Image 1: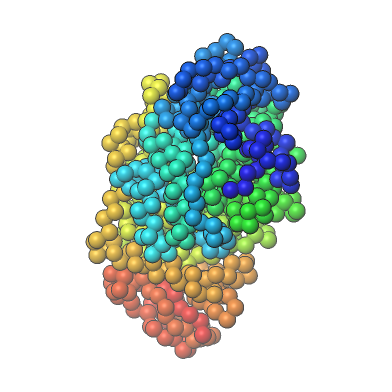
Image 2 (image 1 turned 180 degrees about the horizontal axis):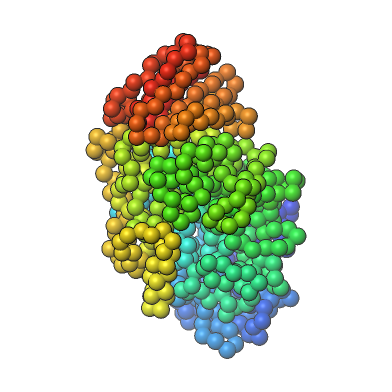
Length: 624
């Protein structure tokens, strides 16, 4: 680990990685000393209260930037503490590294030492990513990091090159998606804490798998959120769907910006995390001359150079704006890639016919064809859902800067019943969806279980302790689904049964489940081994719509060229080959080997001919 000035300024000299921001939190120093620092600029007094192993109080000293500091002897890992302001009750540390008694309990001093064995690991380029999104609590019956470790060999054999872990920052109780976290520096204790996460990252790297961590820098959860009692963490300049906006550009914002930059660098450096998926970046409100994400990317690039290991920043972004992923020298913010929900919306509405809610902007083949061609579906045209013209064309941005998916936690979990695409589509259409995803020129991301056809839902769940909050969350979920006109009762987020229903079954022994998994494995391997599939420049892809339900895509790279055919009809369709170039079939999702009805397309085509595609099928030809 490189000890950076960002979050351990008192242990190293300032160098090219220095920052104007001050460390916050508790850090063990040589000689049994622990330095405690907390930002509370408006407080007149701050006292460190050590609770275990022996209770003691230590007055803290304020510096010119509003930080309070104290160094204490004979502090060991496991020591629990709180801060006491002059006129209030004891409070947990906003920069706590561990909350073993929950979000309302004392903070705990953590020993950051770990015996890493991944020195030769260098990380991965964007083009190498095949991402598998997972939720630690529902991925296995043990509900923890160890449960993920036990499946790493399976994921490697499937062809997965990166796991993306939903947020692990400490949240209320033991059941949560993770977006209600209130201690961004603390690893959820029920998952295995700091040591458990480091063990997972270390093991993943041994399997050749990168780790991307989902982080939330746009809001803090409501329960256990004591930040406003310390200082101006929030601003009323903006509104978010989740409560007060974090203060990234108002008075006193430097400490808030520094806090989250320290957090990002902690994960990437100390925890050896390979990349961060940044939640809802469009809700990071910042009108500064240098946007927070631009400043963050600058520091991450410096860290990457210092470590000589690849570090990635991927934005979830509900804006069709390439500015976020354009280089800083071109006026962009310098993030590496972004999620594209529109690919999912186009695919799902086409396969299911669902046009409720935000799906009203989609439907038919044209949106999916445009997403294949342009990544964004909306590049300036009018959106009936948004009631305005939306988006711009991503000029200069290659396909590998966009992450696409047929399913993810949001698009499943934010359905009223949390029903997966697998439970809504016939088997042939499931295989078609997999082919569309894995053969696209973008970075593909799977959601846990989709590769074997998991039918258990992924629903929204919580384990809050505040009765008013529980009632508010339950009522809010009901209102959220009003525009979709779905039938049924909204599952109770607070119920343990709701959580248990979402734990993966891992029932992969059925004929269809086995065939689906092998299809995923084949397509991932095909993606990795064909030059045409690895080329991601904008001029390497041509998209056609020969008929209402037929999508044709040509991909080329070096001396390799392939033709992709996708039939979205419940009836057979024909593709008319014009005779230019011979074709050799490499894949047909309708083939018996994939438990399909049987392929009717010829293995070789040497002249002008009609190629028949079975209902809901995908075919790949090599163009010779």
